[in-house]
Image 1: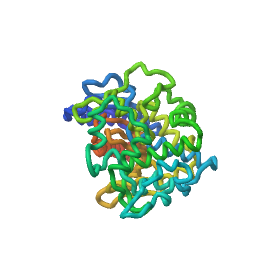
Image 2 (image 1 turned 180 degrees about the horizontal axis):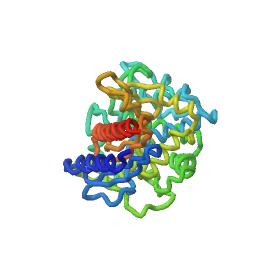
Image 3 (image 1 turned 60 degrees about the horizontal axis):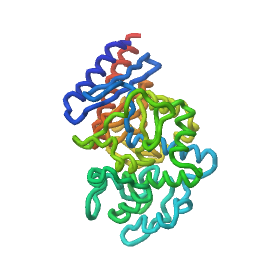
Image 4 (image 1 turned 135 degrees about the vertical axis):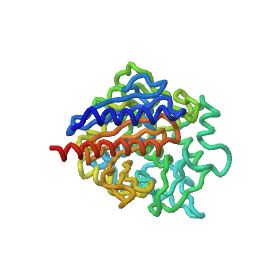
Length: 366
């Protein structure tokens, strides 16, 4: 296989994507395929220090939360069909889901939160009925600490729900805040403790951690700067406290590779659990379905050929972590700029395309 050529092509694509965008100050990319003997790690941008620099992985964190629930399912501690009212306090449940004058709170199930079909608002992306957005509040009050309950209450006070549970798809960070609280209720431990004991420590993800805590082993490199436009917000307490179970993990491309390989090889949850997580989906974007914390990029004739089929997750900062079965490759990285979710996915697909073309040529030659 033309290993050197594909690496050079992908490196040029990656660096060109960063260099032509003045908003991207640091970016990271890991591409790995044991089958095709591919393994390279890249960093680009004026502020990038090292390819293994830790960064906020944003909504890739949702897949971690979903895996933690998969483990609870396998232990018989919860069911995807359980109603969330069985686990949450009355102050959280009161007026949580009012749609067209009817209270649907008691109809929300754990699975509805995992695959974004609850109909709940998204405190991060939705526009409030009055006042400032949560992003504006983060920027205006950088020293403010938000608890998960405060965020949920703010969303209830300022946002509308979208449809009854199970009757549509609407991406909801509010839902993943609720999942974090349920996880803590069921286990009797903090989200950070459950994450560390059940994923980070067993996999040796020593430079990964929940944003408000320390990693197993300090990285020699500082956490990469993350931006809202040209405003660097990595050290804003308002941002760090707000993200919780739907976006609060800091990691490296190397550690994320360990996590994704463990999922593909059924080391964290059983194959049947992964298939359930991938199967029960809502439509996220054209060509992308969203299961239990899992994005599935699937075939759509003409528009999305089968060669792009992959699964994993991505974040609004341009972070991405996908397994690409056609090339048995893992494609992981971040652009570290808020609002770059679709750009990150497009970059991942461009890389998958280059891998696919090269591996196909190699197969023909053999």
